[in-house]
Image (cartoon, rainbow, N blue to C red; front, side):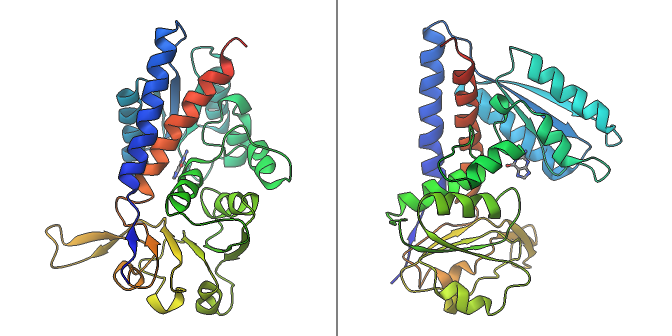
Amino acid sequence: MAANIIDGKKIAESVRNEVKEAVAARIAAGLPAPALATVLVGENPASQVYVASKHKACAEVGIRSIGHVLPENASQQEVESLVKALNADPEVSGILVQLPLPKHLDEEAVLSAIDLHKDVDGFSPVNIGRLAQKGREPLFVPCTPAGCMLLIESAGMKLSGANAVVLGRSNIVGMPVALLLVKANATVTIVHSRTREIPEVCRQADILVAAIGQPEFVKADWVKPGAVVIDVGINRISDPTAKRGTRLVGDVDFKGVSKVASAITPVPGGVGPMTIALLMRNTLRAAQLADPQ
Ligand code: GUN
């Protein structure tokens, strides 16, 4: 049977609308509009596109945004000083340092410098540590992983007791999504480059999250019939039949897997739109944390 295609665009739009209404209500109540400060170091074209789309999304929901751009050769001290100035600025609700940073910079030190109450990406070691601990809650959950969880829930999958397999253990997606699945009482296996018998491991999954950056890696016969499949990958591959000569594919062989799964996210239009929607929600939350109690 053909899988239900999970409409990430629609679910992201409803999250953005919720945020937009809450921002309007704040302003009507005399509270300040939330404000997001972005920090982009260098000229990575993909990062420039991502940051621009974050600013556009802010404008659409009524969040103010301020972009800071530092040169590729910015020093550790320059980046950390900017973060500290943004921490101290009462007009800034949330701070987002776009990753990856240029190689000479110490990413962990930069992320650690962000005030916990402004860490809208949820990447600071304290927020991630709380995510990993029983009975603790982070102030902010990383955006793409939080988006994956909403997509899984939208498919009606009961998480408690389910077998979940996460392909990939990146700091941005794989590891935090695995931690969220554990928090939701799933039994979680993380597949990585040293994992043996990957197809067999994947076949145990009621929920399969692919975040490894390998085009169409997950094949139809790796998927348990009825599984929910979340494809985080965005890979550009050559396709002479396409107008641009290339097209975007995920980490999952969509054509094959959509015949086996009960629900699957498309690429594009699945996980992608969720990241920015959840960033808007986190920025609103940061503003709420700063409100007089
Ligand atoms: N680079 C890729 N994804 C992300 C993200 O969600 N946040 C930040 N800050 N950088 C990224």
